Image (cartoon, rainbow, N blue to C red; front, side):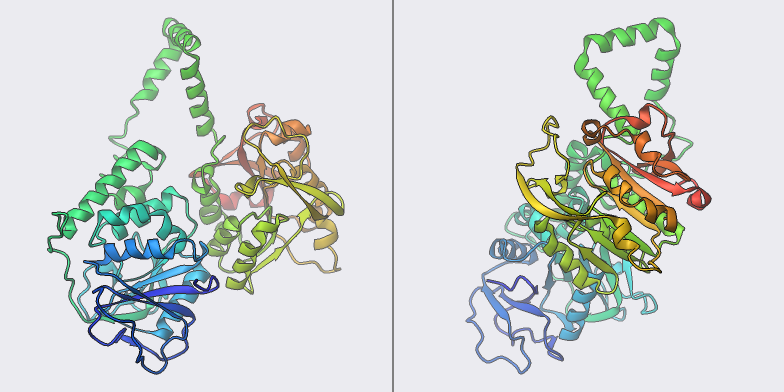
Length: 542
């Protein structure tokens, strides 16, 4: 069994030369080394050089190229490592040191990378130009994809894309298409990072580009096939990503038409039907006769307005809010109430590199993930294992282990069909006013995010003095069906936050809402932010 507290680094080996002969053993390894004999003929090495990592594993299987190594690795790895760990994949021609690997792992965790890599020495020819170092002035940069030569991939991405590994013996297309595309499909937090100040060498030209494999394809043809499969998946299952510029560039789709040729096609027809009385009647009659179509249109229009967009943080608008809007507001201290497994907190830490994040989460099964995030950001992330509310004491948390993000302190929600919170736990509950204002000179608090599955009113009631005294710049609330059963309207929540403008989150912008309007009080999943009136101008168009 692997140590679940350590990352894993695979270095391939031809079974003939000294093992890992290009690995410089200059400091103790902060990872477990996996030596992979791709000849399938070598014996486990006994005479190892001084400084060899104390924890190391051995795999020997005849493989033709990196894609087959990935397939064997994914099968061997199974569930031995938790999803937050990184797995290094280093070719046997990469000249790299233990110090450099340790640094890559440390920074990859600090940035929350879903995939990261050192850069190549620009003096050497690079098969993928963007993998060459662009100078050490900027330590790291994001990249659309990362070549599988010396990459470090998070375990959850490695596992989720394992079904594609048998389709590319060379691994071509795994790195260019599959990894970055499905990182978006599965909404994995984090990005692809190249570290320009960690420069490694390579001592062999690419050998697989024109090679014909036993499947009758060259590496380039394997890559093209995986590109087609990703495009087919996009068109069939994730059409919501068709307007994503990065996805279109990644999958080599033509750019979206410019404004001059992007004339609406369907909208003018709908407007004509609505403006012409007979056509309007015909449309309404058809929709009345086809209730299924009417329901689909209603759901589509609600999504356009910002409702029922809970698929992931990009669709919900939270990604845009955190990465594009919050940085304009000069946020220093954030409070994540209902932190769950820490995805929202992690994105805050990445988007606001000078901020600190305080997180409250009462569900015990989420604590190890939050504690691990605290170890990655020891001076910036501070988790607290309690709930917030309008009173201090002990209360009952209702949850389902397979969907911990739906845990709630609310009673009487049995009529909500998608909830199956059949487990309970006694948890501590505190008032924000008693906690944050405990000292005579409390910390500033510029941003509060509340996601408590219907418990929002209780949290705001227990935070009224904090909000009145510290005047946070922005407060985010989720509104949902839960509030219907609790007797809370959106208006009743908004009246607790005087002096703030109300905005609803959309995938790529904010839209201002009137809390007294019926549509704003719709009991459907939605996210709203309250921005202090004197700071609304800083948000611009959102």
